[in-house]
Image 1: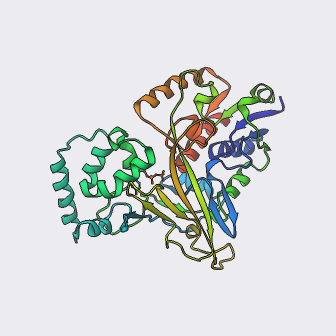
Image 2: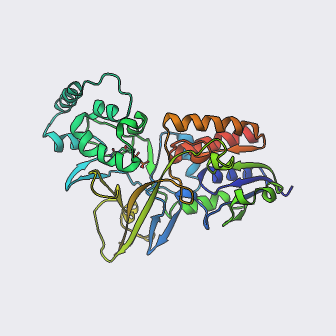
Image 3: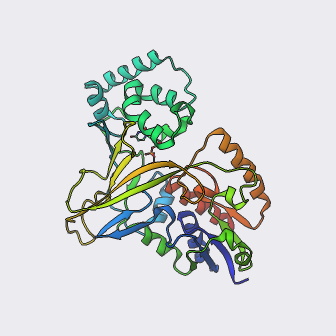
Length: 372
Ligand code: UDP
């Protein structure tokens, strides 16, 4: 054996695990079927702008350990995510906070806002929310549900809100203060120089083979290493033998524009059901419209984000964690437990809607138990 670990997938989970393995003197080979490292956190510098090629990635965490760890590989700027919702030309603050309630109902005080929501919750007769629609109405009332949640969510997931799990909407804070910060996180920012550099630093010292599809070359690749870390989709590893796990995918239409400011914010969500895209990202605002030397960028790059059902051959983005898929995942997990020299990890390996900080946390924990 030439390597201690073969890591399949050069995304965040694979990179963190590789970094820890290398720090413990292990020999590591990383393979990725794409032509670049970084998985979906990959950023590419175009015209001085770090473009989030697989959608907006805003680092945020409450985990001090994770924050300290990631800060070894980058300096983070003070970017705070404050998306704006555009509902048929009406603009609202996100997440749901006093600015949103004031614009929606004209209420002035937190007490008035709470009374309005309570009145709408009672009218909808929901006591024990069991799906996304009921959860949303009981948190923010019917008006906000209809203007800011329903259209966006049904475009993103292509399923009625009644058929989606409630936990998805709990990702968003509801605040009775004038605070537009999208995340309830102690730490937040965008890495100066982009995410790809973080991954490069983490895996420096490993051998890397890009454009290499592990699953089509698994016999020869397996012979190279004692142990495998697999971060691809778990159903594909087992040749879909028990069935196919469902995902949502995302496509982007990206344009370079010869103007300096297209929408005045990094993220604008289109929350109506008619606009075909879910949001527009204007990448330069993640770094305050400046290049790395602090100069104002004269052009801008925007990406319209379109949601679609995943099918073989396209990229996976969001696991659809409903009961049917979660049960199927459990069955695959039982198979995975029998593969004693393979570690399954990450959003695809564990079929979980993880944020970046959660992925780092689970990879660090897995590495800790491996290298003690
Ligand atoms: N969401 C919404 N309206 C918005 C933004 C988000 O209804 O303007 C809901 C939607 O159901 C979405 C969920 O909140 O799936 C989580 O959004 P988040 O921004 O966390 O998703 P991500 O950035 O991971 O795509």
